Image (cartoon, rainbow, N blue to C red; front, side, top):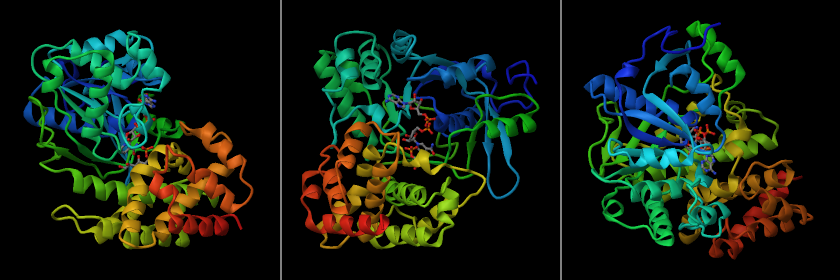
Length: 460
Ligand SMILES: NC(=O)c1ccc[n+]([C@@H]2O[C@H](COP(=O)([O-])OP(=O)(O)OC[C@H]3O[C@@H](n4cnc5c(N)ncnc54)[C@H](O)[C@@H]3O)[C@@H](O)[C@H]2O)c1
Ligand SMILES: O=P(O)(O)OC[C@@H](O)[C@@H](O)[C@H](O)[C@H](O)CO
């Protein structure tokens, strides 16, 4: 079967790929970017006819996505799976793919290109190389290596080096990762890196780092997904991504200069992203993680299977209703009860096959973002965060039972867990991990006692 390319196009993208110039650099061109920001960008170009916002995608570690997209002239498809028949759309906005591991200097050069107005990022929580609680981890070996002056391999190093070499219009740097206040969080990292590297200049002062909340469930693509895309397209697409129908993007309206008309494409521009972001991270992402850990412990392969287990659905509902909702100030127009119900309905989409193991990975950096803020707020209010503690306890048991744990701190976590005999010892060993738990949580007796009760029940 032929491979998708400009000469083997079963359906035309909404934009003319050859007519687009590169105006966006995307760091971390994984599955999510291709099903989210690239789709908004495509729709914005279609609606406005503005051809300045083609995307230069950067693969950070493995060059696999570059190898999938390059023979396809950057074209790929989004396979949308909802309740009815799947639909498929070819996207033409990605105009080049750079592999940072092979040519790091090219990435810096692209960021410095005066025609580039926006850098977007989806590099996972660990890709920021931050200390727990925020700020650059200057002990990180890759950060240290970048600071010696090599062409930078870290995302923060790439941004600082690119900013230092820019002239012309100021740059907007837009994090699209699931982090608390992702814009200011990244701005601080870049500032601290620039200080450590002795980089300065007006481009640093003028750059903007708006916060954003992103939402669309995009599981890792499987071979079965590629086969289905081939059946639907009549050509082979090695870079297809699978997504649910739901798509949402809320962006702080604080750009440094011009930006694509993402608002025309359905993105919400607002002065304050925080209420949207907090609701999403604490409700959707927290219950996602809870279902991943509890689901994996019960042997479920996918989130859809886990949420169909009545006990787990009840636990997720209780987490949102009892622990999370009292900590939130909802954005105007968002009914939190209805939102919680819609989240569980989305998780139950059987066509998505989002693996519990995928959502469970990197727990040490996800827990503080998704669950521990809720725990802190509930304890401060004098309440017992029973359901949130259950999610944390499930992570602890998962850590202790999972061979080959996929986590940036796997070695430390698993050696702590291995030395623990019994539930209380496991809780104490993992609570002591100071890169995950803040001192007040490590010392909180109520939290510890809830964790011991839950771990005891989960390991019975
Ligand atoms: N997939 C989703 O449903 C979804 C939804 C909302 C937000 N997100 C955000 O997008 C991120 C990426 O998700 P995805 O589905 O594209 O995952 P993915 O595995 O397909 O891609 C991850 C990307 O991050 C890069 N990366 C990973 N570790 C890195 C590191 N240590 N340093 C630099 N770069 C690194 C990889 O090179 C890759 O480009 C998530 O972590 C999350 O913050 C994802
Ligand atoms: O992508 P991760 O690994 O950071 O988190 C897994 C999921 O919880 C997450 O991707 C959700 O699917 C997403 O946040 C929905 O918008």
